[in-house]
Length: 517
Image 1 (tube, rainbow, N blue to C red):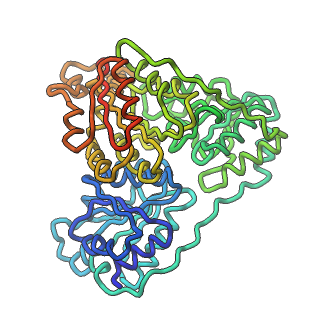
Image 2 (tube, rainbow, N blue to C red):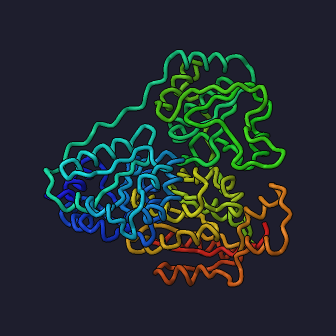
């Protein structure tokens, strides 16, 4: 058995049985070893950013790491943005980066680079596996590191000769570290804050945005009168009919400040203290109101859900105190296709158990509200802010959750970052419906121009315009084998979305929206 075979067998035995990849010469023994370990599901991506984003999406929906295989430092660089998103979302990824053979490094070949330095900005754990006798144990350690808690990107640098040389064989998985229990005194102290009748809010994030955490948070709110908010861009939020509804903190600093205004206490539960996404002239960066005390119930390494449940019990909240969202669907829209009628169509048609990957940006402004009473579904957002995540994450989510419809709401500018994900969706036969919201601009940046106080002229505005030539997403999708249509009215979009959701496999709808919303 060579090092690559021992490594892949160790990954599979540790529960990492899916690897998204864009390999090169240094990784050929890893690729060859896939035939010897058929339990490893290998998925080819045509760009490294698709592979890394797909690993993120897979982990979000499966609850366990995927592996990703990249080629040397430049391949890692190409995948870096979506590894950044995974890091910010605290999703577990085993990031394997092929390297030159150990004895070849001294020759400074053209693709030689400092892989560890490149990986350091997105990885909480980095190791170079320089001995075939240790490569299996290095892999087991990487899986354990990726699992956390909290989840993180663990980068294993894999020299080519470590793969081809003989190795002793696989090793047993390293036991995962359980989340830490929250001290009873912390729960008691925060319960006292909630009993004080001072205006208080809970800010929920991470693991608490699934049903058990939402239920516990709603119990706390129903008993104490506290407000419950969710972080702005959740990694995974369970929502819809029958689940406790939670209001997300606004993206725009002014909106978030309005939601937090008047608070005396803010309790963080697996969430970070709110700050503005960017700095703006004469505006606050720290969004916590003056005089508001910030308390931490649980961090990412803690058992946040158990802590929230214990807090509800400490307050004497009845088990059935949490209100649940009622069933509601908007009518099928008609007339012009715009951000509001697009959102109404999604709300009218979203199927039970759907996974919504939201990179709609400005054009998706209304969709959250129109889907609040839809059948139960998952909502995946962009916690790291690096655009181009939507199509890859939808791809990985579909691999992780066969049998569930994935709906990717994708802005036109963001779509062009990682459009190659469509090819992988066709190759893998994934049930993903992509809606490209084509308003022919980086609309969010047009908004930001005024917010930062810039005074743009025609040349500046050209840099935010996506015309000349116009993007034809139907042609682009068709060229990769995806069935694609274009909608210019609300009726057309509703009919096309209904047909796409009723059809298995990849589909794309180009929704042509007004240039300004």
